[in-house]
Image (cartoon, rainbow, N blue to C red; front, side, top):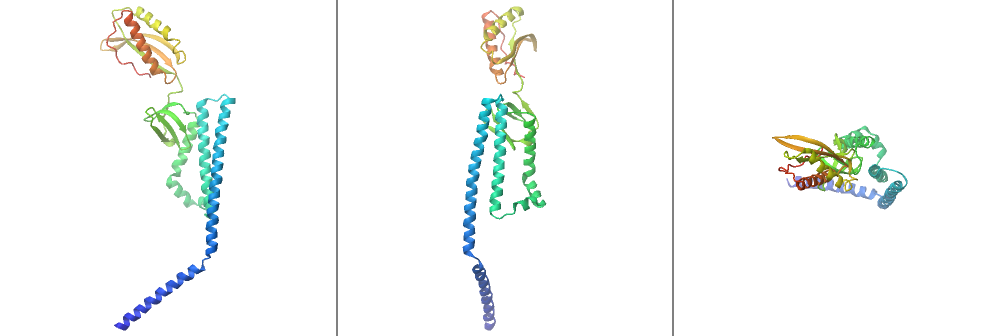
Length: 299
């Protein structure tokens, strides 16, 4: 039995010795000087490529920015459209630089990028990892810009999100909410765009009606207020004020409506201001104004 264990130990020692010799020969076969030189050279090349791309990226963005600053001065370009195109070009340049940088680094490391991209299996993996969604975002974003559905600075409603368009990119559209929240909306999720900046907004002023007084006398008071505020809101009012007349508000209540068309964003202030001046002027003229209902929201 003792001879058996001794023999087994000898076999194990020979196997360990053989494996150690193989590892030693493998390590000795490596040209460490050449390997170290290659690692150092590759590292220096990657650092140099990174430095060059940082410079090119910075110069390219400055050229784009200065080109649009110059365009604002010598051409008649709408500010919103110019900002939209400006943002889009910066995004295109950014993605192009990222792609070229990755390609250059992988090529420096000896990775056959062209062969991998051309392979059907790699293409399928890219689709599975989200390239399909990215391409859909780009196509949708292109159509949004081509059809001029929105521009930077426009007041919009996209789904449940309302606010001001902050940026339009290849992949996402950024909308700044009225409470300060920045929404990043993938372009492929944009199905309906309600642009509130492409037409005049309507401010409908509803005034409780004193049925004991003459409507004609009431209209004279309202016209006096309109004349008084005409210069104050001349830049914001595009049409009106128009006296629509008495309207049955239901439940036995009568109201008088005045319609005003304004520039986008000015409708709420004008509606509140005109209603306050109307009520004050009517009360001073001796009209008894019933309980004031909340003003109708602009449509």
